[in-house]
Length: 384
Image (tube, rainbow, N blue to C red; front, side):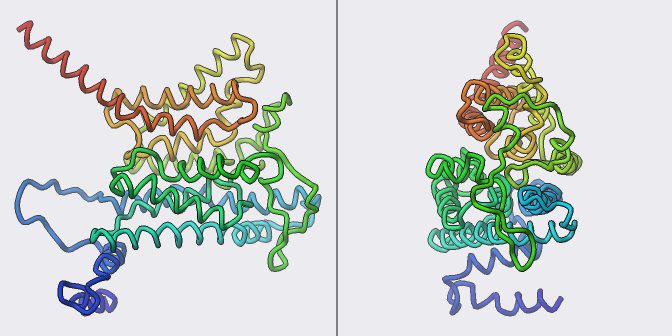
C-alpha cells in the first residue's frame, strides 16, 4: 500500500498544470504496469472482462519462460560441446553461462524498445502501451545469441518505429514487430544471422563456459539438411540440445508454452493446428514427388517452425481474426514455410518469411470470409 499511496501522492505533479506534466504518459505507463487502472467508463456501453492487454501480455511472457530458460541452458551446453569439454561442465555452470550471455541481449532489446515507446508516447501525448513487453523478449529468443548488440539495437529501433508506431502503435500494426526485427537483421547483416559460425557462444564469462577457437563452428541440423546431409531423427531435436536461435530449439519447452496459451485462451488452437497441418501436407507432397527425401515431420521439429506456430503465427493483432480465416491463414503459413525451405537451399529457415507473408494476407483473408458470409445470408434471405 505504501507504493500505491506514494504514486497517488505524486500524481498531481503529472496532471495538467503540474511541474512534471510533460511526463504524464511515463507516469501513467508505470502506474498501469504496477496496478489495475482505477478509471471506469462514464457513459456508453461497456463490456466487463477480467482480461486486458496487460494481462494478455503477461501471460504470453510467462508462456515464453520455459523456452527462454531452456535456451539459457542450451547456450552453455553448446559452448561445452564445441569446446569438447562437456564432461567438465555442470548443469548450473552451463545455465548461468547462458544466462550471462543472453542477459545483455534482453536488456538492449527492452531498453531501446521501451525507450522509443516512451519517447513516442511523450511526443504524441498518448498512453504507453504494453505491447512491447512481449516483443522485447521475443526478439532475443529468435536471433542468434552471438548477434552484436549494436546490430540488435538497430533492429529493435527499426522494428518499433517502422513496424509498429508508424501504423498507430499496439493493435494497429500489420506485421509482427519481432519478425520485422529479425528480417531487418537477416537482410542487412546476413553473415551474423546465418551460417555455421553464429549459433554457439565461444568466450568464457566470469569463469563460466569455455573459450573456443574462432575457427571452430557448428551447424544447425536444418542447415546440414539444406546442404544435403541425410540426418536420422534424433531425440535431441525434441529436447532442444541442438544449435539454433535461443528460444526455438526445444519442442518440449515450446509445447509447455502452447499449453499455457491455450489454457488461458490467449492463442487460437485453430491457427496453431493449421500451421502444422499446412507444413505436414506440403512436406508429404514433396516427399511423394521426390523433391524432399527427408520425412516431412523432420521439418516440423526443426528450426523455428514450432516456435513460430505457437508464439508468432498466433499473434492476435497480425493474424486472421475470423474463425474460418484462422484455418486458411495457418495453413498458408505452414505450407509456405516448407516451400521456402525445400525450394531455396540457401535459406533453410523459412518460417520468418512465411509468417510475414501470412501477416500481409490476413486482412484479405478476413475480408473474403466476411463477404462470403454476408453473401450467404443475403442469398438465404432472398430464398425466403
